[in-house]
Image: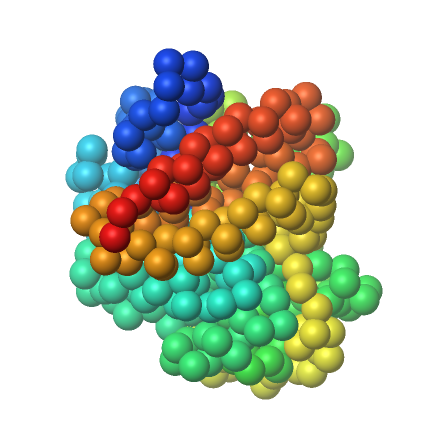
Length: 376
């Protein structure tokens, strides 16, 4: 019997300011580099849709659905501005929703040569989920679904039971990502086309399969081979579909009954490990990938240079550990590791990629200057 595992990333990034220190250098505070009013406005704008979506997901769970949420530490921190958001996710937890762990700052720290920073952020996030939801996550979903050769071994050391990553062609070589794959820890791979049907195409009236209804979607999965289909989409896409006046919430409410009609069960990642044997996929042990491929994060010179600079700044920062400003500077450093910063410089961002890169490196170089000036 085919099964479906549905996971969703819940995250709103900390937005960098357009940073031009024309009046001289300023004190390195969070507000120096990040646009907090814009972040607050983004959350407040989305709160009604978040609450409404969670209410629909409660109905979906009551109908038999199972969901796993990857809520970033950054988003959890922003929810202090509107605690009702956290309460709505607590309701989902009380009805059976699961939670995964990830790097706290939605960072690309798993690409650093030293895994210390990555492990610290994952532990921070795990502890935060435990504190808020009284859940100890056993499933790990990396920022942008990044997979590296070293990642699964590190996660095994950290006692994780399952990894969810991207079902990229360089891993699958034409195979369907519908199995639990053998790795240092069992690994599920996102089914990209089906996830995109929900994440991207759902509101597209020019799409050949528009409108997408639950029965149609379930029939596609019922005709596929394999054990488990893993769907992973960004929560923000659901909010976007709502703004386009689509029927995405009714689709989610109807999914469990449609899956049941076709003999498809909805399961958690941990249940997939118990229900199915792992399958060998040699490439998963020696290839790297991320959402839509590593070229999105590391496809051009500015992105490679930014990663190099982050690593260098981290080494400098460690030498300043005894300074009174260390905790504040380390927090800013971690916000500067957000994946969105690299994606903004990507080759796909043809209109603003260069301008974004100039601005990003202006902020980063000023931050590096501030760290170098710190006296221990």
